[in-house]
Image 1 (cartoon, rainbow, N blue to C red):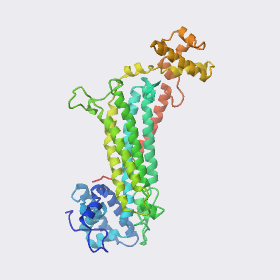
Image 2 (image 1 turned 60 degrees about the vertical axis):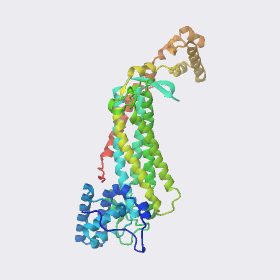
Image 3 (image 1 turned 45 degrees about the vertical axis):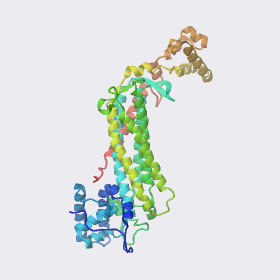
Image 4 (image 1 turned 90 degrees about the horizontal axis):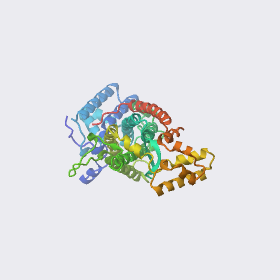
Length: 480
């Protein structure tokens, strides 16, 4: 069926002319809100049912209305019906499609008791709730890849860093699981956001509700909003904090990915040589044949800025908007849609990069004790001998100074040099001047000892199961 029949505006009765072509072009949103079409049709079905319940559609009319919506949905899905700029937005386009299929007498009844204001506020929530689960599942995939790296290298030591300087030895698995923890919080934020967003604005009308005796709670239940309908019709149509919060979560995910990406970029350099990227997840140079570039990591780092820009742009749009609906809110969808799109293409590539990473154990372990990273172990050994930490810290610092003067590492100091630095430094101090001992000594909760990391792995696995179950609990509507 043709998608180019006559003009069907949802407004205009009091207008003698227009809109001007320039206004039509400015107002058009169908080119980006068309992805809401399946949600609009789902909302229309729920709305038709409450119109019937209120006595505004007969049983036969409801049956024909639902059949018409089914046909429209199929035509949208296969591309035989699409929106046009003349339609202005997805809601107008779909009303035109319904009128084409049912005629104006029956098709025209569906608009009663609803507004584009409460429609879009509801559909936007539905779309984002679906994509929160998609993104949550993709985060879980990345966490699985990171956990796999940790499990495949349970005893590999590496230099832990603060200020990008050598600090203390840590297990590579412990370092990787730190990123898993941050991604777990991102996934938790998505779940908590979803719970707060499970409220339907449908039934709020333009801003004041409806006098037609409709049932917003029935619509909410029909559309899967677990917490029912909006308690305030003005807030229902005007609030976009759910969109801003979603944009923040996606920006935070982007920032966490960027932090991992920065490390991969560094680790992949010749100077570090900690990891090697798989050929399938890296690129070459158009002029330098030896190059193997970490493009996925660099794109993740770049896209984090884009995700942050989407958040700040949306917040600027929302600032100082009076209640209730304002046309400024047409600008709320594109940045958040873009954030979804960017993460849904970035996360699978990033996961592939991490899952295929080759870890250079020898290089990491070579550098684990470098840079006097065992100095803290000397200080803590002295504390165990009864030396106040203030003194122990100074003594350990003197050891470092002595090493720097002779161009050696801490474990190369002689017994005589130790004794000269402090009488507290007996030969037994050598027992802590090795990486395995330093790692094993940090066995408290959250520590880098192999036993503590094993506990952390078990906890992460439990959290991942919960996250995967949540992500898979609801199949998203297919967008056109």
